[in-house]
Image 1 (cartoon, rainbow, N blue to C red):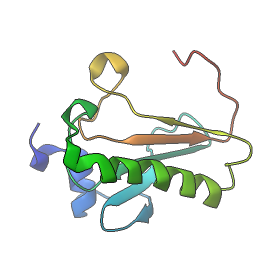
Image 2: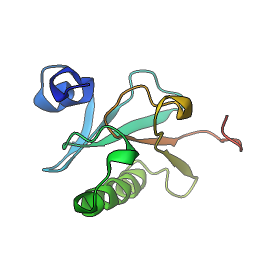
Image 3: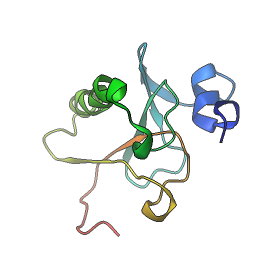
Length: 116
């Protein structure tokens, strides 16, 4: 998939609307349009990276920033104490449907294990 046809790149560019919760120079966080929990944000790098398999050494800071942003947002949303789940799927068999790396921040209900 090219970056121009990537729905998340189009959201970053403002071509497709989203309920944006947070953004900075590197990261965009928005509400999932098909939430599976009362709190369900997608946290994405503004740099197009298709899957976790495509991470490079150059991306270490950016991938770490996805995680720290998720924990900051959990505190901001006041779900840090009750609990939250962070999920990143890699490729189709793991459930990845949009091929632009994204971290799901899920909270607001109890989760079971294993997840599916």
